[in-house]
Length: 212
Image (tube, one colour):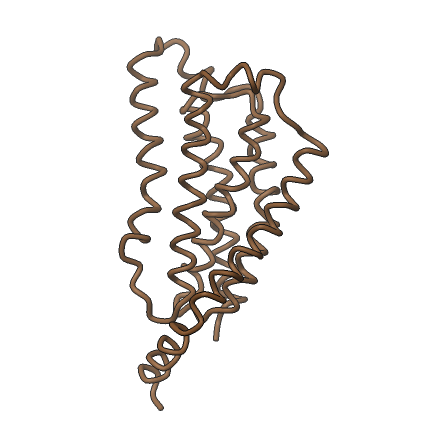
């Protein structure tokens, strides 16, 4: 049997296992996210102005952005878990969160005086963000990599990167509940730098752990 026949056979077999694969993703992601949430509430917790900020569009946008990251990354990782699968809409969806962020930054540029741009970009907790977003992404990333091993991704590097993008979204959602910085400028620099670190780890880990 040549490589193409093997991939076709695995893809056909994987179609019959779609439900168990989705269940594995759900369980492993939930366990990883629970571990990160436990750390968050034990050591960070909600910011003091959390409930008062629920009517602030910038504060709410953070969760739109991070949830979009998580959802699109999960959809792409699940698609890539199947051998030879076309990414289709899932591959395009991962660009939605960055596109939303670019649009939000455009609004910020138009509505905030230029002398405040740099201060909003630097924020108050840049180093915390750069450390905690990657750190709290580790458990969800481990869960997603474990779930991916139940599939047969033909592009393990890309599958690992997609898993990392999703894990970063989950981690950033937690961190956003504590983070005092709400400007899209801050998200564009520090949240995305943290995400880039996790995606690099996921890309490398996927290439090592998901090969078959």
